[in-house]
Length: 117
Image (tube, rainbow, N blue to C red):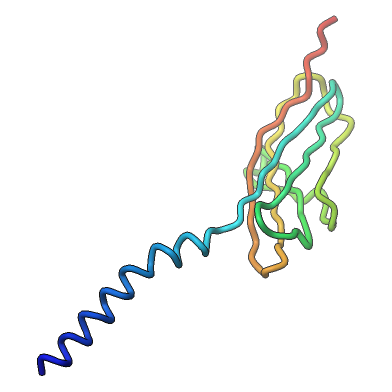
């Protein structure tokens, strides 16, 4: 009986000691998004940390409908929306399917530059 308890304690101790190492190595990929703008356009660019992006989808928030509307879907990692008003604020959601099969997303609020004339 004492031998079984010693084996059980050894197994539990080993699992507890290994868990932090497993947790650190299984860190989730993140989506980093940035934007640049002019008076009439917003360009979004994104990258996933540690993983290759296979497919991306860009959505724009429609405040009247209180939901996101799909703007584009492609394998590239950038999107430009044109014909916006100066000073316009827009909320985007970018979703990316990664090579490892996981999907990550990020919401960003961007704005066009103000017309200073």
